[in-house]
Image (cartoon, rainbow, N blue to C red; front, side, top):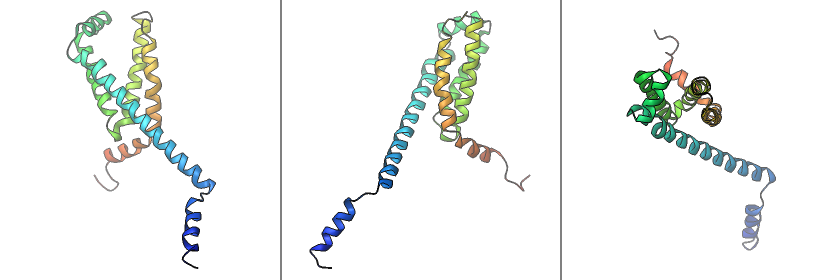
Length: 160
């Protein structure tokens, strides 16, 4: 092959892309965008649970105290829910705990919906349902971490 035809052949092969490569490349980019969007959603939910939900309960803000007194749960219930929300918000940010945290927070949202319907006659009952949707998505999308978490807490076979 002469020197003049070699670069042209290399250029042609470099610019020709098979349809399979294009599909794989776009799927990879789409998957990366989906993972980034899911991570952003997790950060937003974590901030919500840490700052807007857990913090007022843990500092005994008057709005939280009044709500829990009206439910009859008092400060003990308020602090317990605040700690659970704090743990769930932190768990959404820890890769191995993401799915479990989303499941736990989702269960709390089901309970919050029931409380809103029974104690507060449906006032603000949509809020826990709206939060349940992204929590369910996170729990499902990050479910692969559950096996990793189980392996880390179970003793290896042959031990103990």
